[in-house]
Image 1 (spheres, helix red, strand yellow):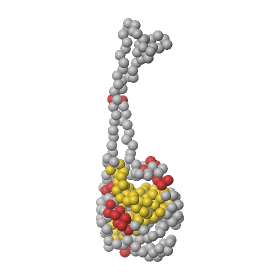
Image 2 (cartoon, one colour; image 1 turned 180 degrees about the vertical axis):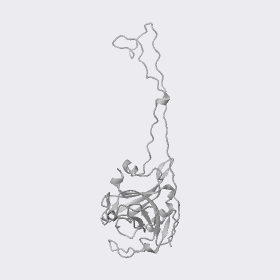
Image 3 (cartoon, helix red, strand yellow; image 1 turned 135 degrees about the horizontal axis):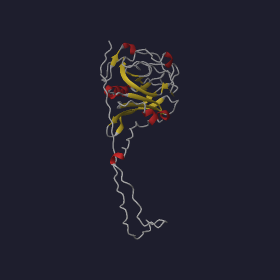
Image 4 (cartoon, helix red, strand yellow; image 1 turned 120 degrees about the horizontal axis):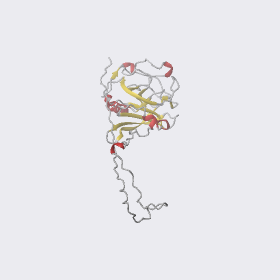
Length: 264
């Protein structure tokens, strides 16, 4: 029977700093003529000293905005898709748009230091033909983007995940991969990526809100030694460590794609 546990919560943090500048005006010159200094003389013969800058009221000074911290390797357009409450991000970066291998690192948001590495980097695999921003069923490319990750499962018992975990024999798989490698054990542990799926359900759920043509069943699973159909694959112990590290209270996401796309 499936076993589910875990209850998500929301965490968010923000900071603000202000600057204060006070200056004084120069006093006017007396009515009697005064010696003219080279720096204050004008072509009209005005002997008064040049006035200083006007005083500025403290409440007229706008607070300087504090730039939001960004995940390493992630540009402003990609970072904008990371929810405000997210404090864990699993970043999977491919070298090029067509590469089928990647590097994966788990980051956490530290209130004082910004986004810092919490685990990894680990070697990873993705789809045979690389990446795409418009994934369709059977294109053999992994979807590019920022996706929530909140449901896990596998053929083997829960290794200590804080995410809801469904142990089920239906995660069994056989056959061979693109390089002739055996697929057995690939789904011993999986984490569902919320691409074209209903969050909060077992990764085995087959409902596709965007339609079957947009693909689905995109998971983080055990590496079988070759490229995937669309999923991300990690070595077994790295995946088990990731499962233990992900915290639903941190509203974790996966940020995935080639380096050039993530840097935008």
